[in-house]
Length: 211
Image (cartoon, rainbow, N blue to C red):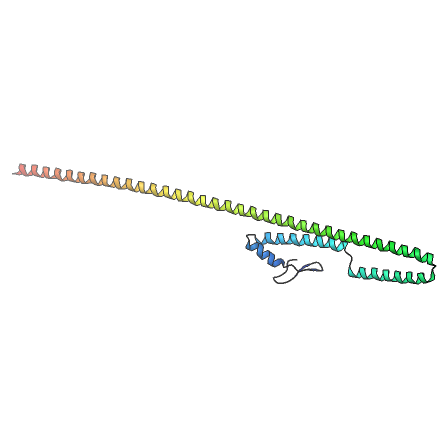
């Protein structure tokens, strides 16, 4: 499970000196979401748990070592007693058997060490593969973020061009309206001037007829 900040993470009944909360925070600081960070840390914890299970499966515990040592010591004690009782020829045979057992124990020890080395190498390989996968995921997120930023910039540019075109269109229409108003103003002035001259002409005509 994921531990709190500053605490030791637990895997079953095992203690790992590994602050998963700090790793989640570190991933979040580098651009991952909380869910992605927790999934990555959970995967790392599962891998470490599996590797530890393999190591514990192949290793001998301290209790088992003590039992085996007690059995060996008991066997040696029995052999010593038998050596006192047996003839010299039988003692030589027992000594050869003891050497054979010793060689077998050395072979078993060598096999255990080879298996431990193999498990450590597999664990290191799995961790390197997980690191590579995390780096690839981080690079993919960076590329997606760059693409999104590029799209946003392009969208802003399109909006700016559209606004510029709209402003130009509005300015053109306003200029056309001003020209039209000036034209209508001149027409009205001409109409008023014609009306005034017409009224003056009619008034002069009436005036002459009256005189």
